[in-house]
Image (cartoon, rainbow, N blue to C red; front, side):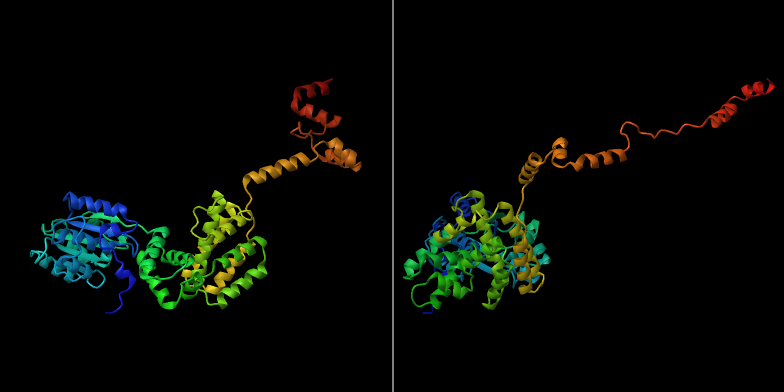
Length: 441
């Protein structure tokens, strides 16, 4: 018998086996138990979190030969065929390859007929956002008023591409990313059952690399089983997946704190020469600074998902950086990742980013500035007499300055007095009668 990959072998068959989706499973179980079933469901969320699996379990719960049940038997022919994807009344359709209006017209013709050996005809359309606009329009009326024996289950990773007219006709369930702790717990269970020897660091690295996807973590574990012959170690995972060691990020933050440009350029050379992906390095560095920000802000390591050794390293680096410094470093890296996607040369962008981080000035808060101003005000000699005592030439210079200064109280300059002859001329002009009398006399 051919080898069955772990992602298929350990696929959940009942609601209780699904990880991290209690808000979805509890609602669907209550709907089955109380027979309050909708005619259309929309399952949204990231890849590998259980959307299609939930659709299959729902189909088994409704079409189990032992009756509608929250816990399907997984032994009858209907349950087995649904699990294998070969049941004639449960159609699993790929939205990417059946996206046209002709496929939807064919589907509308088929739903008229009763199921052959089950209670419901169930259509599971994966990646439904790939359907064309015309296909969605053709599906609208059927979706709003389908036959009683038909149930639609749509799954998508991009719900924003699904028309609102379709979403409004469905019950929507948003699947969440699975936490790293839950993935680690699941991987330990699998390794124990499969007799796989693996250390905690390797499990942690695989779980973090999966980024919330249980299926991805199981696929990576399968890859690591083929890569190693003995115990799977953290070093094996780093080599096989091309991951960057955490120590490199600590080296870079030390270089940034010490403002050592030469070592920074040398570190870039080492990263490029070892064949590390620049995007992968910037992503890891961003996660590293995120962890550092948490420790600087909270002064503890409870939120960190790393080993105890690295937790101690983070605590020692909290004395070197302020919150503002770390936030600005994260901003520099985020801008670099955006530019990298626009086609900028990876090596040049990495060098530029490291130089910016090293040359970045230390954050100064407003409170620090106010304290510096107050300190300068206290130390500054304000008494002019003291200044004059210390510097005898101060009096002469100050007097010269005062002589050059205009008087503050006089806003207008005084006009020069006119001489006596000019005064007489003015008087004669202003009083001509008086001037005539003088001449007659």
